[in-house]
Length: 433
Image 1 (cartoon, helix red, strand yellow):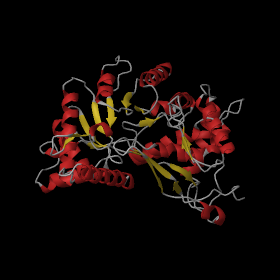
Image 2 (cartoon, one colour):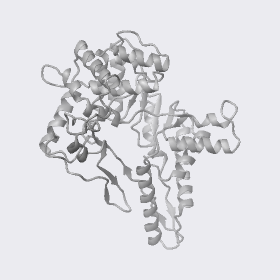
Image 3 (cartoon, rainbow, N blue to C red):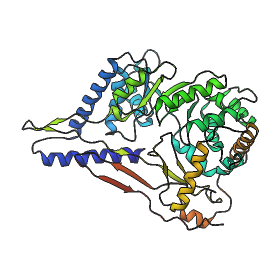
Image 4 (tube, rainbow, N blue to C red):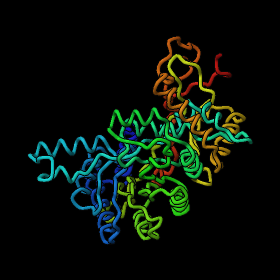
């Protein structure tokens, strides 16, 4: 996150310097940029507050923040002025804001301003599911249907591990890594492993009924891609079919104030209770040059970094050559996997993911058995711990979590694309045996 945020910050600074050269006398130093960003934020907050939207709002800001200082100012401003503000996903911002309030003499709790910072909140990243899917894809295959389409057992394991660590209160599913509909259908048939029941009881004092479905654990659904109304209807219908209470819906695929307000006007059945966004609450207002010329606002880069390889240190290579994701986007725009994988294998991996995402029927015994074996293998048999004997060839080829590249798309005035190569290593022609 820090690498991505600083990349954004340095690109903004470079644009500012280039703009200053184009407009002699114009000053776009850090103070001026922070003032401009706060001005834009005030406008966004004013427009949101003008509507009685009733949404709980979380700032999912951090990696794309225009400036670290603004990330803190953004949360301080929102906690005081934004209706429905709940908190931030930024550990950096939350810790700094709490620290600053404490230094100013504010006490935590109901009597002080600390409570207005809101919770540090968020969900696990898509990487948790995509990495587990690469490492545990064999268990997906164990629950394949007659046509060979795998089941997203590994994605269920990723969620169970997250819940076992953080507890079941407001247990949130990030469902779109390999398709929301398939995950819900599989979760409805998969029974919670007894070992998971033991883990959450011991760690959190939580009780889960014997034979409960994994779907029954999901209290919040974070919808992050695809057509929101369509995906949300599918989610609500899936819970209805199982006789389960409607989950809280979180819409985190929002790019403008208009989209936030439109979401707040959706029919109650699919209307989100929570909205998570970051970029639309950042950026810059237009500047004015000394000669009165209007200067376009500085551009924000779309900074993205994805893990595409995982392995167990010293262990056998995964059966699948890379990690990645599909999403609920029908046009494939959010599809991601290791670009170094040969095209033929690339196509084969995507085809398997697509087949898995299209499944709607699952055998309860098959997926439950595969899920239990996978969960036990990870939590009891230490499957993902460092192996005793190192596989030297594979260890030399990969790092444990292998980040390949980040694409930064810049709109005018720079108007070009920058690719930052973080790591460039060739894949071995065949995995070592």
